[in-house]
Amino acid sequence: MGISDKAEAYRQRLLGLIPSLVYSGGAGGGCEPVQFDLYPRDYLAYAEASLEEQSTESRVRCVGHLKRAVDCQIALFFCCLGLEDYFKGKRLNFHRRLEFIKALGLVSPRSISRLNSIRNRVEHEFVDPKDADLLLYFDLCQCFVSVLEAYAFYICCSAKIEFEISGKTAKDHTNWFGSSYDANAKQLEARFSRDDSLLFDMSSMEDFAFGLRCHFALIALGYIGDAEECRRKINQFEVSNNRVEPTANAAVSSASRSVPRVGGGSS
Image (tube, rainbow, N blue to C red; front, side, top):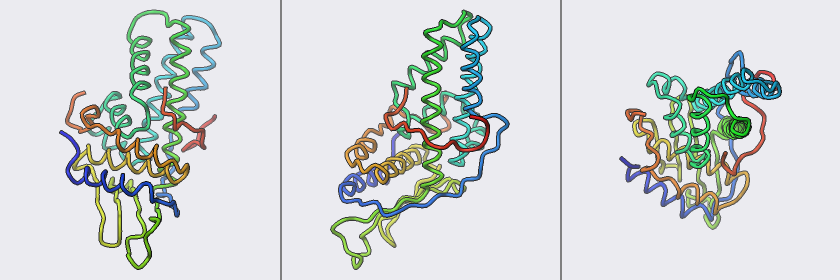
């Protein structure tokens, strides 16, 4: 199963437009604060404190805190997208959630593979975790949390993003392009003009993931202005490697930046 003809047509139109897009503004989606008793940064702090104790018991405890930090950050991110209840209801596990995040282009496949490999080794083998493995696992988890934290912030602040198209005039009614995400409706709209738009929703998880991937790439284009990176992100979506439909069984992107966290809790 791959993206539809509609999604592929969107990709081609967007790739043609990107060199002419000039950021003109955006708006937040009104994300409600996510209320947990503990947050990813709390678990990272507990893990760091456990690392300093230098005992077998503390290293095992550190592994548990790091697992919770990653799981908590994934839950926060999916809450910001309005998808947590859906994924929880479908009982999609950690690896299926990672596949969806990978499909969005937020975390590199190599980082996903390393995170999974170390996570499996330190969690499922009955051994004293090695210091080298544990330190690498800590760094990967910390970077993973930072990246998803940043993108949660992006989607809350830039659920709607608009561009002017250079060389077009207002008389054409085609001198602008916009992408907007509605977390409540779980729907993304790409609008080329007043009467020309495309909708992506969860009726096709592949198309939905692709639409969201494009939206995140456009947010980065608006903030950074790197057209080639935007084109690369959109071109690299390969559905054969990103099985995200919910019926299937089942360190970090260079875009990483430090931004304010979503939700409360101690740092």
